[in-house]
Length: 277
Image (cartoon, rainbow, N blue to C red; front, side, top):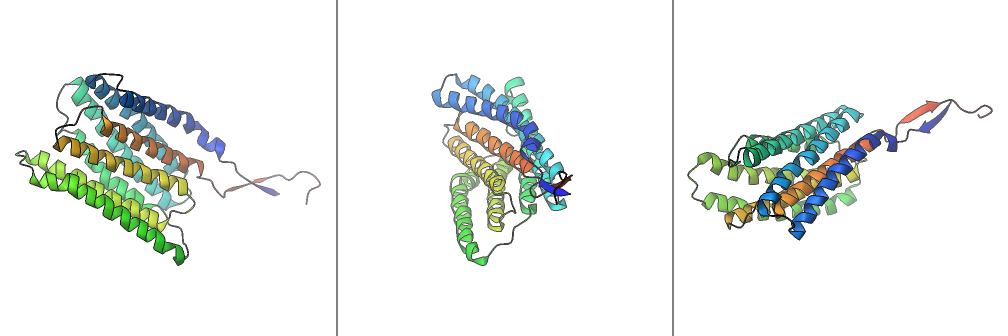
């Protein structure tokens, strides 16, 4: 019997079209934001609608990645990641309903419940990803990069989000709790992605880099949104929404990368041609 490697390109192909189309929606929105083709209300509508397909794509493909993993730890990691994406996508749907259908303020609302649950689920999924053993010589440099990432991002969150939230005179306790909870969630995710980079997930470099890019894009989006809100310059369908959409796109492609490498190293026994040894 001759053993041949199983190809992976066909296995990931069913999701390629869906992720590509959802990413195309994201790119179209980014173009119209940069060129200011539409009015502010239209941009708000496009942003809130555009979040849904790319979020749905990331959720579905992440669930597929969970089903495709070979070890139980990776399966549970991607189940948690898929659950995190589902909660955030649910929040986006409720946000759209409140703002564009009912004409109500989406903050605070039930949409925040989905957004807040996203943080611990995503953190748990990141921490469960299996690590790869490596020589200690390379750990020092990666540890330094992770420390810089956490300290730099933490300082930005503290300066632009947490301190202004504590110094604000908000009478609504729920709104105050949410304004503090989101920055804290960003800090936890930043620490989680730094820990994931430090441990180096086995055989999935592209996936981890895409997850890192998604977390960082979401963090920058929160910083931009918080800074603009504090200074009274926030507009619906602006830069922060574009960055949130970019974060979704990175998550979708990270899930797709996990599905395409799911059978790396797998082998299928095929009959050897006649006359072969």
